[in-house]
Length: 299
View (cartoon, one colour):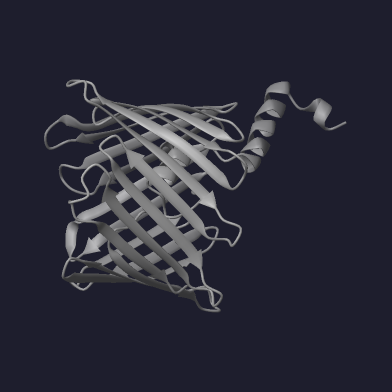
């Protein structure tokens, strides 16, 4: 009875708000995510790594999280210590590196309106690194923006929209000190239950990319990416394959048109530690040195 008294437009808006809780509007960086995960990876789905890495994370009973990361490149070892705390409403973190730099960040969600998040960050002791970010997600649109808190700030804006599996987005950066755009990229794609197709213009529209990723059977993913430099006409391509093994381990292989082959094997030990190894070789010229990396996650 009550719903019949509500104006149809209000009813439609309420339905959109309900849908938002079921389907989260993707951000611009998430367009083509399946291809990015296949060819580049991330800590959650296997990232190609040709350095030596060690990481450890733990969370106290009060919700404070500690994360230690160390990475060895050539003869140099760098590391960070991160302390963070988050709730549904707000979050705060602090990261310290061996050089003595301290990165601090904090965010507050649902400020003034549902889906609106304000964030601030800075690297101490450099006051010019301070930055304010505003993220807003509402039905059919997501916006991420940031501005440096300086007299001549750099302004970054990214936006994306989605409707029935079709995605469209763009990002740009404006440097007020030069009164010029320093970045502008566009991306469009289609996302179905088992595959994604993405078309993008990157590097100030100087590079056109088409990528495809197909989840074959829940454990196997295959994909391809073709990139073409608009000015020179140079074209490159990459093929990728990922397999979740019955043991729970992950194996990934990618090969590009230059003959560079990259492999990854990642598994979790019985005691809980995650171990990953990567190897890269040049199939067309085996005299070139191999690249390899090892990562151990003690979390």
